[in-house]
Amino acid sequence: MTDAAETIDDGVGARGFLARLLRNRSALLGGAIVLAVALAALLGPMLAAKDWRSTDMAFVWEPPGDDFALGADQLGRDVLARLLTGARVSLAVAGGVLAIAMLVGVGVGMLAAWRGGWIDAVAMRAADITFAFPELIIAILVAAMLGPGIPTVILSLAVVSWPGIARLTRSLVMSLRGELFIDAAIACGTPGWRILLGHCLPNIVPALIVRASVGVGFIVMAEATLSFLGLGVQEPLPSWGGMIRDGLPALRSDPFLALFASAALGATIIGFNMLGDGLRDLLDPRLRER
Image (tube, rainbow, N blue to C red; front, side, top):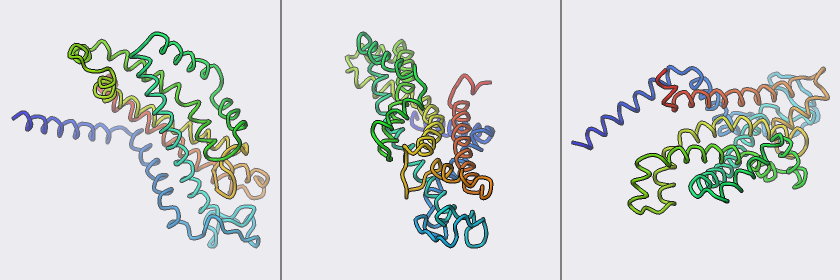
């Protein structure tokens, strides 16, 4: 009887979440943009008629037309093919940064909240030092010291991304420590690591999902900035930031390269930001009841 009731409750909860999702325009539009970018990155080789690496000097700065749907760049390479490959690069970098930042930030935040004392003080002071400087400046300094490349971009952006996740995790775990189910687990002699992983972590996952979805927009923008400055993704691998930089010298005569790359970058950032805002409204019980 209990299992049947739980199944009914789960079904109602799932239907309720779907109904709220369909009413949330921000989440729907943001999710649609993110899905479109993800599909473009996944299906890029099949969507583009030409190879993103092939050059043809006979088509330098070729305008959009039958041969090149979105034109060709300064080396006669297909802009559409490079935009689609750039989407794959941006999402791959964002995934790597999120994986490292989440692992370090959640781990440090939970440990600081649970143990307190000098561990909490050291972790939060390290986060404060990072927050004292603009995130992009720190990322540029780290990338300049380590040299350009995708691993450098992932590491430099992870360095500036984990403190915010750690602070959020710490505050969420500290708010849970006063709950009765945590006191009951402690009274039963449950080890601290098991309480954190089995009781605290499942309860803070929705907030972490919202934080991650909003953070992807910053990561994509920061990766494009580093590539624009020559500290990120290197040729011949395309990056939206690098394409914008390459299109600036011909912005007046042949603006399509910089404009299309800027549009792809802007749409992706807006999509992730809207998705994050929508998920916050859907997953926050205080906002849900309004």
